[in-house]
Image (tube, rainbow, N blue to C red; front, side, top):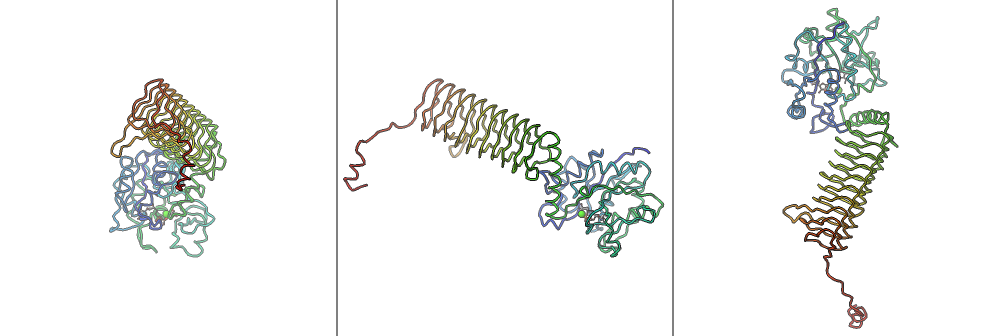
Length: 460
Ligand code: UD1
Ligand code: CA
């Protein structure tokens, strides 16, 4: 047994016609991450830092997405087609005596451990190892044919199967590990005299066996082999990934009221004793602290939520919310918003590109845009920061402990200093000094008997 150097080839040149999409199949996302990234992650988990990705259809888009993270080989369709041809296209990257993992870009549930199991079989002396699974319904997959002793003889594609072979339920996952010299000796001997007129990588197995080499078969769970060819399988694979993600979070101490209806992207972090209700969608680099409550129907994208915060039916985008703060229902926190600790951001409040100091309350029906608010402030109902004059945006500041009455407009740029009060209904266009009361509205006049007089004139 020797631990050989390893490299990896990820096949992603196919057209993926069954997706019916203008986007390349491997760039479709599952749990917020592009399909091909899961293949990359599996290869990296198996110790291959920089795999070779075979590109062909929509090569530029795939290259651009993976730039800096992989090397590329271009498969030229005019010289042949099929998974074997795809690997031939990457031959220039196959050197030395080590081993190579080969996997497809459309198998997001494959794990690094699956690859490592294949690698161990090759390290132990096999010329190659292939991943298999036993499926209830093997339709569409290549079948694994074994001899009387149970050793793998060859793989036969669905389209080339006899009716008896089609009964075999053990399938080829299309994931392999080969000793590089063995693979290189077999590739030139692949032929395309099959139902699809393609060079099948699967034929390498029979060729090496004909050479007297041993090919190991390693069985894995059916789910790990799930390939994505159409949108139905995309949804099925995403559901399976979601079960993995949510399972790991729950085992880490997060309570999910209904994990089947909780949508957490790969990479989101949630602290222990946080309770997540159904309909929450946590995306991107979102981080939720410990002991939080995410009530139903929240969407958090790249949001950071401190410990013991509560969020209900709200949208939080690229923003931060401090510990013990409550948000919602129906609040909208837009990019660049930083809400401090123990604040209250209530219903129908929109905040954009603003800082809100600790303990400040913005309880209802308010728009805060481009403003810096201190601590312990109270904004009444219906306060609007008028930050835009149709051409440029300006900032407002509100000092600590200021009290802004209901239905106030703060016309930026303007500053309300600490401990100042602004009377309800004011439109503030000038700075308010510390501790002052600003009233900026016309005085009320009561016209006695006005209604009766109008009626007498027949105008009411
Ligand atoms: C392949 C296997 C089959 C296995 C199944 C598992 C072959 C001949 N068949 O069939 O035994 O059960 O996977 O899912 O290998 N690709 C290229 N260039 C090509 C053709 C394909 O890069 O010329 C890529 C595709 O983008 C895809 C992967 O290879 O990522 C697999 O190709 P696909 O056509 O989906 O193979 P299957 O018919 O599913
Ligand atoms: Ca496939």
